[in-house]
Image (cartoon, rainbow over the protein chains, first blue to last red):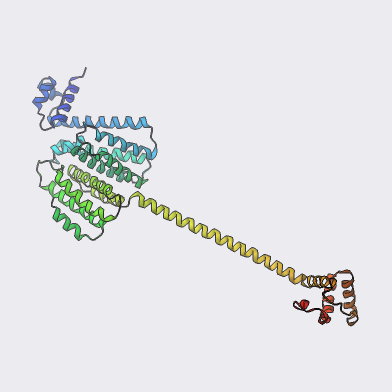
Length: 185
Length: 232
């Protein structure tokens, strides 16, 4: 059985994903999770904090899925980069994919001084660092440059895939990413 | 996003599609920065379908001039870069990713096919150089060897020409093509050598010169065909 914090977070995640972050008010989250308002504020002193936790949780789940898949494949050197592209394609091609979570948050909170926007920026950098670590592991000298290019490509691919689901944008973004990777090897 | 303005700016950057595409990047970076600066609490990182279509059209116009059969693929690749960079610029309020876009465009415009062609060309050139070097060496060695053989033959011929001509003359005499010279006409040493040669067919290397002299004295008695190669 989920504890109160987990229950609040799970309910908020469902609502944020389905209705959007700004459209899901605190009262709705309290009502849907069946907890007292005081309990919510005990764990999440503000809605912004709840949103930040939601983004971090989503991000952590994404990396956990990615790491598990990469470890299962036992890919080595350059193969790991190609495998990563396969996984990113899979991820942004899934019907429930609604865009990169930190991207969605930054769309809803464009003010660069807003804590949610700041969290989005951090998570975006985290993705680039994650990609750079894999590129380094694969022996790429300009690992960070490649990582930034991969992040840009998949951002673009994710957006086009979201605008036109099933258009093959994810697959094409993967091919573009592979072309870039090959230019670094 | 103003299509006419973007086209105008791209047109100013030169004729090459590469230069124009990089100019497009620069213009989109400015356009997006302006959008970021003037948006207050408004969703600013999303692009409309119309804006994406304008971008695609501008890229396509340039990639079609590349005369590359992969022009459509390159268009999409560059489109991903531009859209991704617009989004990251909006999210992070930073312009540094545009440098990555520039690099990416360079990579996409020089597709793998061209890179592999260049590698093939280099390989073929190296192979050709290697073959030319090897064959030149072989020819040189052969020439040196053949020259060496020639000199050996010449040396042998110089050394043995007297003997071989004498042998030839002897054979001619035996079959009657050549008249016997009168030994009495010759000096004693030459006569002895000559008689030995006529009777036994033996040429003593040490007295070969004497025999040669003997034969040269009496060569007028030989038939014409033996005179074609007079003894030296």
